[in-house]
Length: 364
Image (cartoon, rainbow, N blue to C red):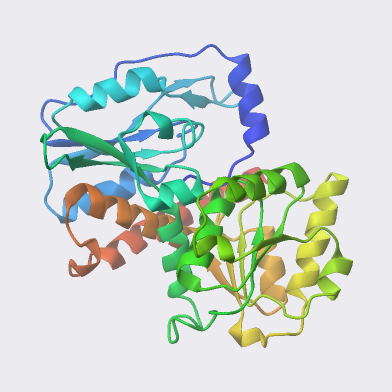
């Protein structure tokens, strides 16, 4: 799972810079190679997170960021990264006997799907692929590249381990949920709320009405299933919040950590604040998952929700659990059952974030 990013500014920057391609590396001294495919990748915690797992499992593997850096720290825009096009990436990994799997991030999460051999239910329902793993065709023995989405696993596990779900997995079943955002992370959260959390309906709040309509349009196009029976309901104004008969005890925020500036951003923030200040359910029963973890997981919105008495779950938790699921698919090992490994992963992520904090605060 990539950090929630400002896709508009990224797209503008990419248009300004020529693509730079480098060879797709597969170091000869390694037994297995996973990739991180997409851009920008400069601040990704995925490679060191996976290295923590490989080291613990005594695997001679690595995850390589597959991109080239352009720009410099002394120029504006700051350095960004570019990855090779799909038509170069996929033939390379098909032919590579050391390839074990790949993380997929912006801008390839949607466009790569049609080029893969198969997709899981998660990828189809969410409409995005963040993970490629290998499956052997039982009849031909051919190596198949399968796309899935583990971001939803990250959302599920981050919520499941939060109060009150940690003691009662069905605490939110039959109750509404709320998504704040309209991008790929919001789609993963919708799937998790429908599939595992058991929400009765899902409210969605976003600055861009067109993004909400895109989510609704995609949802209508999918094959009818029990998931689609859980409606997605846009909420556009604080007055609409006041008219609801039941407020959500679980909220997932999936937007970048920027203060609202435009009229639509200010409106969306006001709607969120109205939800946060609702008096029902009791404070101790409410969970707020802040999916943005870059540059730091404790965001302005997390602070706002905390001030209204919500239990805060940080996006770094979702990052950890989606990575653990990727490692399970790639290694074939139950990562959670390895003694001491999950605490080690959590200590690494917490330590990395803590080390970045002084530099981030200095630049604010």
